Picture 1 (cartoon, rainbow, N blue to C red):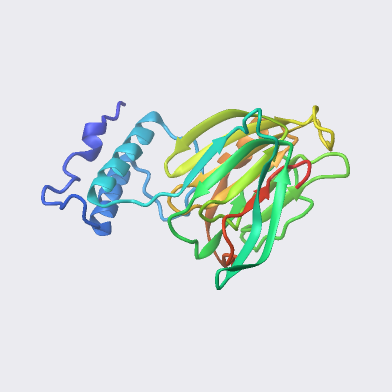
Picture 2 (picture 1 turned 45 degrees about the vertical axis):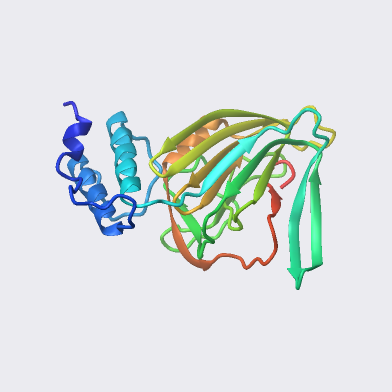
Length: 273
């Protein structure tokens, strides 16, 4: 059975809508109508999953219609490779300015940086994200979960191997940067609904300091909330993908960490993190 995009959105876009004005009710009604016709409407928390082409096209169209109804301020994640003549990547980990005077500051430098991830955040988060996994390749050795399995960190490793590490990154703010060391290659970048998904692998063999030969990474970034989940490990990328597609992510009741400084910089490197 073929699903036509025109059929999905027929009669769900009001003729009397005021373009450019904020109208959350109408936008939600448009989304609800399309989801009902697709049979995907659910009250459960968002779940990263494989979607059909028809659903992806419909979701893109709903987003376009919603943007026409009112301006949406999105969180963005961009990436760049350091230039060959860029000796090192550095930035403030913390900087506090009081009455125009810098009281406390700390600059961190990463001479082995292979990729820089930068964030634009129109609004500060109120609460941090949390997740629960419905499949992992082997039982976690660290990580505290509630009775329903919700947590902020799961880790499985031994002295010589880290199959996987899953964690929320709770200090995302405007101008923030994350560094990944080594020879970094982006394997895949895709968008599923509100989620931007980046898959990367890093080769550490050329570094003076190395704990592992290679590690894989998946970044799950929600452009509507700025939530970031990092899945990393020595397991192959297909195993990490399996974890990602069998997990749920939601807002927790834990307030975001307080921060009064300027743009910050941090490390997500499995070999040194």
